[in-house]
Length: 299
Image (cartoon, rainbow, N blue to C red; front, side):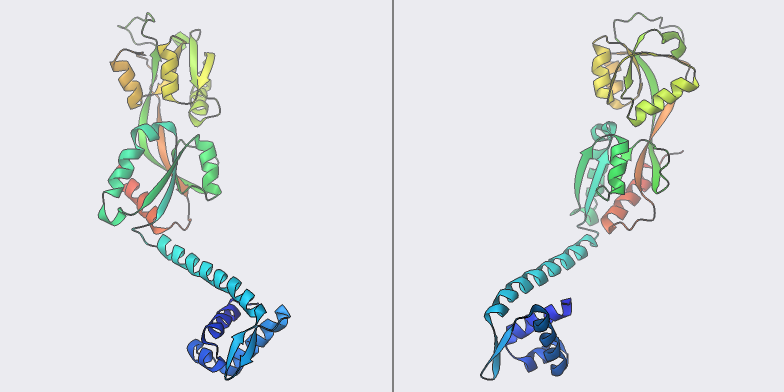
């Protein structure tokens, strides 16, 4: 059974005449008749019967017609959906991001993209998580673009840097610290320390820094993002080494935490991540290019 046979069957059932159907389909009438004979042979039932100069569906043909119409309608819907996806002005983009992006960057970034008239009908889906799990969703074609940290051993992905954030040491406001000197992280190895979740990209990154500096931090707890870490530091659980996000800056300014000025100068990059050499629907390609043009930084 072929798709062509289904189209032939649908036209014959509609016009109830082989010659008229053959002309409409631009095929020879004997070829059309042979195609239907093969279809009936495969199904082992008669689909048509003569009624005067016309032909009508048998009871088997009527049942088969319902399935054929459903199949061909679904195929037409699929074709329309594919065409819609190729329309730059009305595509859909699946975006995933780590916590800092969701609070500080994604809303403004997407809003700016959508204010352009040619993008006004593009829709988005958003999901927050760890970089590692979100990268797996790219490989599984569940996500188009991820905003997150760098992951090693991902040759099939492009990591395009768009944000650079300093890492700073923060402490509870009641902690007594000499403020007229520049400290070192080495001075606080015995102080209770709150880290990023060890399985997260930032957890791995900061621990790598500690290993390279031969630091033995006094880990007492860990958390997934800056907001949770800020709450722990504010409540005197310990100090932490975090990215200087807007939330962290605000917490320092309103006195919920204090910054310890240190000689170490580390920073992290945040990236737009997507598949290399992958066919992306036009709306996704446009969004990737938009981010590159608007948010590219010196690397």
